[in-house]
Image 1: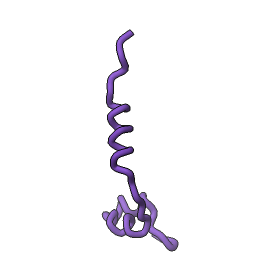
Image 2 (image 1 turned 180 degrees about the horizontal axis):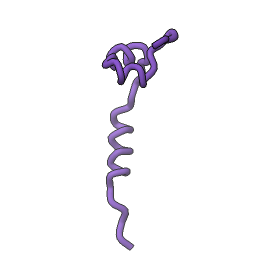
Image 3 (image 1 turned 90 degrees about the vertical axis):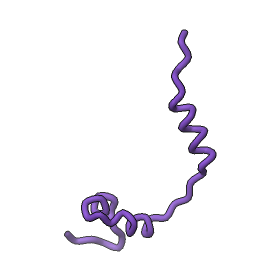
Length: 48
C-alpha cells in the first residue's frame, strides 16, 4: 500500500492508526453548537 504525505481515513481505519490520522488532520469543534444541533435533530417532529 503506497501512501502519500498524509494517511487517508480509509487507510487509518484498516490499519488501526486512527490516532495518527487525528494528529495529521487536526480540527476544532464547538461543543455547544453541536449539542444544540443534535438536540434539534433528535427531537420528534410535532404531531399535526
